[in-house]
Image (cartoon, rainbow, N blue to C red):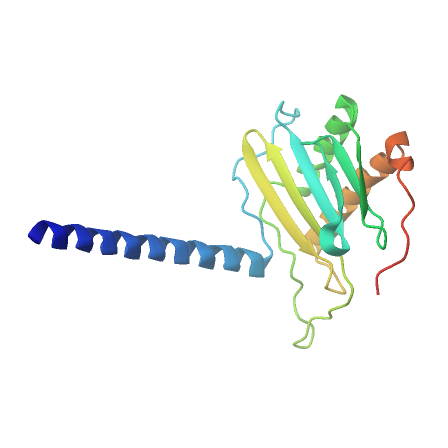
Length: 188
């Protein structure tokens, strides 16, 4: 009977400790999202593009557009007609060009994407797009989530949006992207 009591006590203690750990992880996650900052490595980016460099960018309303070098695909939001995906692989030179833009904006550093209130308020807009970046550099994963709900984005947000536009312009110039159907409709 003492063994059963001891085993049950250990089980309840283990469950209690796991619950505390999980609760702490949820709070960490919620704090990270509410601050709109990234969990990024502290080391500097190397000058030369590492062999494991890859990224994905999901963007637009409901993040339905996606450029993924992990998968070698691009997905276009067709709005009323869903989405369309095609294979699209960036050249080594294009990847190097994109990588070389990242240290200039300190992509591996923590970013601030929530603007400071003006007269106690922050202007919000609807509908809005979002940008979600996932980047692998030297075995480290960087993530950035930018909400377009703010009327006036922060400088950090502007820099990443500008980088996304740079990448998207490369994508839009390719025949694979041009062959995708036109979008039908719009967001209100």
